[in-house]
Length: 80
Image 1: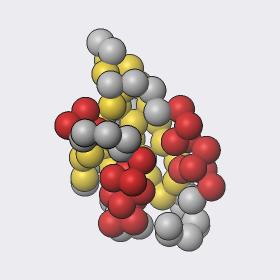
Image 2 (image 1 turned 90 degrees about the vertical axis):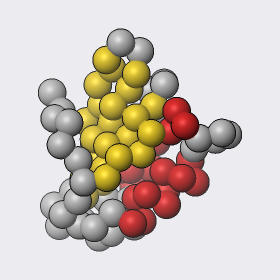
Image 3 (image 1 turned 60 degrees about the horizontal axis):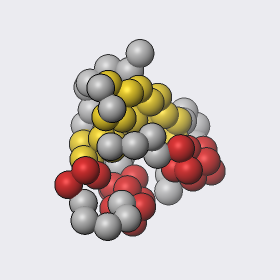
Image 4 (image 1 turned 180 degrees about the vertical axis):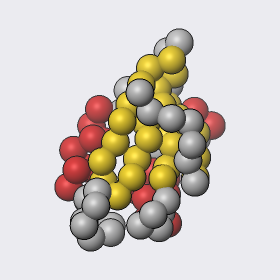
């Protein structure tokens, strides 16, 4: 299970409209050794392929209908 420790948090429940650009921006700002916790009202399954393609790994969990996705750079991967 993922921990709640993150260097940055992005709660897309507070974003009006599609959150994809906000998520990509947060990933671009993420340093190699930082972690991003994404909070969403739905499982952002389409995002997982994008994360993989950009050198990130993730763990997702659903807590009472809220999704928490913990995102980190894969070791040895290039940044965004």
